[in-house]
Image (cartoon, rainbow, N blue to C red):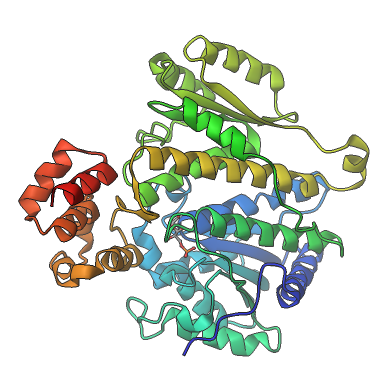
Length: 462
Ligand code: S6P
């Protein structure tokens, strides 16, 4: 029996919980020596945790001590590259949380507000952290942010290495939430545009919710939820019409960071992606790297999207734009102006940033998703070229292929096998839909590397 949560992003109950969590943040702001906020998650949720820990910059600007730390499964490499396997490790999650809450001052914090994000209420890494908090209530208060329509639908298989399940952890939290010893923020949202990929709607809603918490910790009137309609649809269309071979994001400040995050998320969702910035042993993400490694190879088939605001060095933007224009005429700008100078002096800038960042995030998500759809990485609204690199993705792949589950079982989850067999899903999909052998499916995919077209061609000819 499934009881769907009546809570939506704007429900009274959700807003009430957000304000209670904001009150905890306010207490931490008063006692930064002995207390801390830790934000954590995996994949997109971890990147959002990192991004939101940028609240520290605004605090410093306002002469407050920084209070936020972040943890992302797979460590900092996962910020800008896909590291899906560590998501399955609850013990590692707990260890990383313990480490981050003790190292900064070489002594333990007395009060830690832990904000774990898992859109599907599914990541074992986060469940391990929540369980750690529940076992150390004297120090840790856990907050869980997710968007599963109801708790009874959240993952219920034992976490690797223990008997707990994500659901059992959430059930314990629900009980403690009655006395505000834990907090659950789990509004129901509609489905993601690409089935199973949380980077668009889930990621954006995470950003909105955490911004409300942080802004309310300053003021009892938090930022409002008026996010509707930025008319970015036409801009996205223009960029997509123009894009041929590759889309490059060239960004400044936090908007540039959103570009990096958007590009990093493409790999787990869409498979191999030329949208990723060049990446060697070190990340090559500076403007100099762009000039050295990307610009010389740009052609008129490539589109470049500049991401900046008037608080960035606009002269430098103009100089780089000029050099890009020598290579391609497909150059577009997502430019933001600060909202009203007078108000900006009275209210911390942070409250203005949220809108330009969120609109940029939505724009980027739409551009990269649209580009991958054009590249044939999506069939209906399924990601058909996903790499089976953790247990959630394994289950997702199995569901995708459930018409002939026995065959998927023969490709059983085995990390070594799965990491190397990157095309397992399209291969199995072609076999299942057409009844052909794996060998034949391989040949068809070699002949037509655009997965959607290979699948469609197979369907037509079968
Ligand atoms: C992004 C993709 C993944 C998830 C990650 C965490 O589109 O779906 O990288 O962000 O698996 O998922 P969750 O449900 O714990 O937030």
